Amino acid sequence: MKDRQGGGNKLVRDAQAYMEAHSAEKFSLREMAGALFVNGSYLLRTFRHHTGITPLHYHHLIRCEKAEELLAQTEQSVSDIGETVGFVSSSHFSHVFRSVTGCTPSEYRRLHRDDAQEAEE
Image 1 (cartoon, helix red, strand yellow):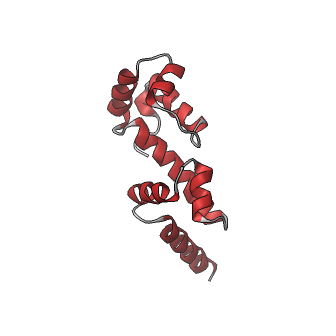
Image 2 (tube, rainbow, N blue to C red):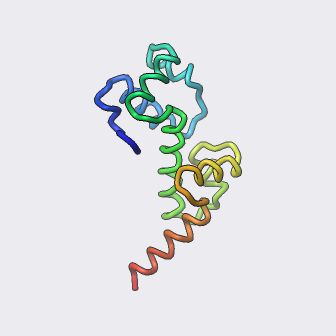
Image 3 (cartoon, rainbow, N blue to C red):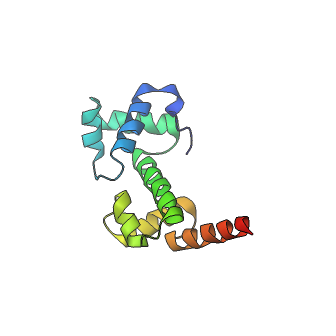
């Protein structure tokens, strides 16, 4: 993730911590801003300025990182993993995962397994 520390900005770090703590939950920018005691527009501008991405994109990155771990380490179905990390539908999960990683969840799992098998040989 680009500048995961938020460029030293406390508000950005607090927003990142909030999203990591609530990564599997659905919440709005307004709800997060309220929890951080700031205006939503100000939070959005500040977050984007310091990280180069929106809070929603960051939230997707967190969810996809967790999904990558589950895809590599478990036999859970792709739809179950999507639900576990907080996506309501498997199609939305696949779409977001592909936009973040460049491959579908199934492709990621297959590629990761191929890499693991090659490392064992």
